[in-house]
Image (cartoon, rainbow, N blue to C red; front, side):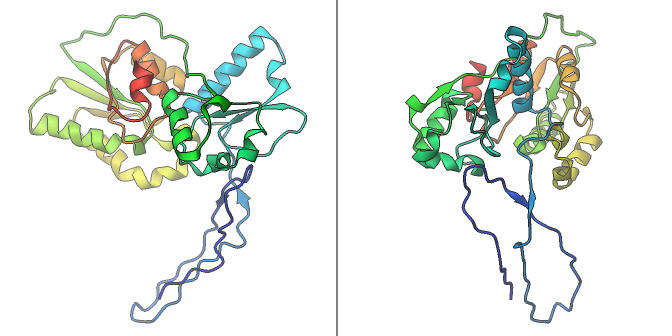
Length: 292
């Protein structure tokens, strides 16, 4: 018998972040016994940060870039507003608030937008793609006229000449693992072993949850990282800085991103296009709009 009690089922409310479950000691018992398994989360009170200051994902890069550019134009301008990147952690009463949404409409952190009363708490709600805005209209009933679309952007990668060494083709993947890395490894193995194609290609993988300063999430993907390390013509690099990624892209010919995740935008795709890479991506989420 399995029983769970005292589970915190309070609805997601504006400015209420998720809580991290506490860990309990587990003991091995006689499997023939009837067991009552109790999960008590009533005392959990560790609040998760909205975004880690150490994170270097697309959302974080965009915010840092925007703030730098705004301060160049008018020092102190960013301090006149409360800038919220998707996840609300309290509202400042003396500032106009801009909610800059990067996540999907089904994300728990944005469900407060189902309530019309919460719309008026923000001076403007900004989406990063038209596809994303349509999703919020469809699933949350959020009206078009209450939001605005400002698509993501980057500093262009300088013009360069791709390497031509013995006909080798450099292919890269630089996103988190849950967005399609295992699928890519399957395709890579099939291409080389079964089709006997791409034997002159080398795959460079830059992937881990350290990108978001969430290294503990890597545990469930260890087998994928190990597989990548053991495969022929595959180099696994983990997570590196965005400056290193931009330099790496100058040496790459193809960006392979068989994403199984609905992107609301995609800095990875924007950077790869800017670097002159041939981008292999699916028709999913906002990827077609981003790469148009």
